[in-house]
Amino acid sequence: MSDRAQRWPGQVTERTLADGRPILYFDDEATAGPVHETADDRPLREAPRAGEVRYDVLTGEWVTIAGHRMNRTFLPSAADCPLDPTRDPARPTEVPDSEYDVAVFANRFPSFAPLTAGPVEGAPAVPFGPPDAPAYGHCDVVVFSSDHDAAVVDLPAARMRTIVEAWAQRTAAHSADPGVAEVFVFENSGQEIGVTLTHPHGQVYAYPVVTPRTGQLLEQARRHRQATGGSLLADVLAAEQAEGTRVVLAGEHFTAYVPRAARWPVEVHLAPRRDVPDLAALDDAERAELAVVYQELLRRVNRFHPGVERVPYISGWHQAPTGEDRELGRLHLQLFSLLRAPGKLKYLAGSESGMGAWINDTTPERIAERLREVAS
Image 1 (spheres, rainbow, N blue to C red):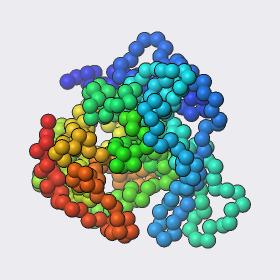
Image 2 (image 1 turned 180 degrees about the vertical axis):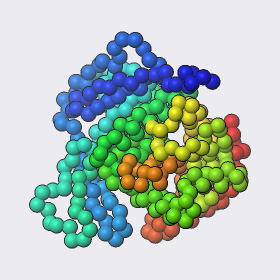
Image 3 (image 1 turned 120 degrees about the vertical axis):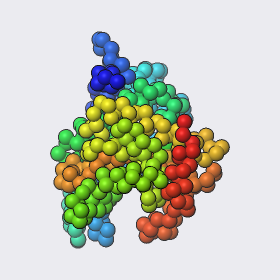
């Protein structure tokens, strides 16, 4: 396939919502002339503000305080879905246009935002550790389709390619913000996960601080580099490819495998063979293959439990931080489900929630074997 054939053929159009939040339309195919010109005429107040982050001196982790999210939209009826296109002017949604392929807009109830409400002036000084800080950052909603009942796994290949482009573009845009330390692209699928809107969508969080999970990965990568001179995530991928026991599929640019110490009853990681820090660094050929491989992984996860039509899952892209220690990070996907058997969820009870000590009720080798069995 030529380089030209692998390039994304679509286009991006940026507009503004009534309260000043940006909205971007990603079209599968480029068209001549103006598009997505429908204005947002809702009587909205100013763009929403985020709260603050507070340092937990007991763990060394930052906790986001976002009390304004308590009243966010929760499982509305299909007729009131805010992610649908606006086809009836009397029932406007977050997406003003009547048709779209992929729409990305700043969350109306953000955990992090360019505008912040805290910390409160005159609040007592923090007795230990660094002071509270504004929850500066960005929270994007990425709507995968105008079809309310669609699922990512069933979308046309061209649409999945557009979604990959949207992920990469938003990663690049937010990484360029000097107030952002890390960008996380993710999707929650299924009410069992805690999804509050059933319309197919994902999110992009741009954090003001490095998250605890990434901090752990970076520390382990630092120790590995000091001991061996190598890249931890690259060396783990090479070891999994060499052993092969837990490899689920291998493409020209990406390899999927179940991690040797998998925590979840269904878990698979997807990593590029080339060392890249984030989605924005993928070239055209890698983005094209990713679109295909990602949907194949979702199909396999959906077939994992016999008789289960839709397996709930969380899909998250771990990316290198934008500043310090960026060279220690490496792009990889973590895709997992807490469904351990049909009708049975893995609950994070005492050991996991209280102590962070994970116990898996199956083996990574069994997970990998099953994901190979259910290949398309």
